Length: 142
Image (cartoon, rainbow, N blue to C red; front, side, top):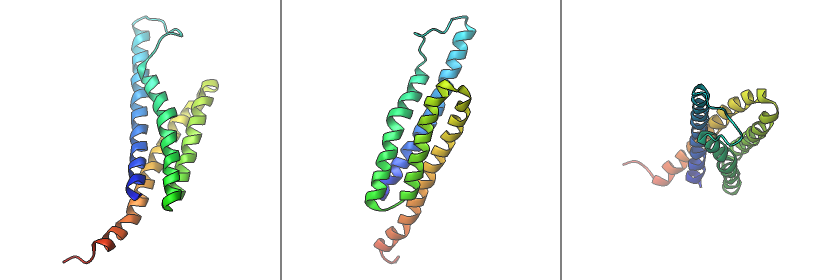
């Protein structure tokens, strides 16, 4: 269970990096599109926005829920998994709210760093707790 917990944490962190890359890709693509004199309409689509949305709505939140379930079942890293899930919920809420109040997008960007940081801290915390247990199981060094 330690390994599953840590892997999910790292996957969440990688997903945040993918989201940052995707939103940068979409923004620069949109800038180039406008610079080329093409109008942006309702049918204009930039793939980076889609990647950002899919990862943020359909991959990270379920992973954060699964992480908390694993934490509760294995009784390890529950505090970190709960904080991470809360940060993800806030992040998704900020994403939706930012469409109505674009200035909230700044907080959405900042909270992304919190999600990434919490995921890696959680992985490290559980990894550090499991290292002595693994050493004890291995027995004395000869």
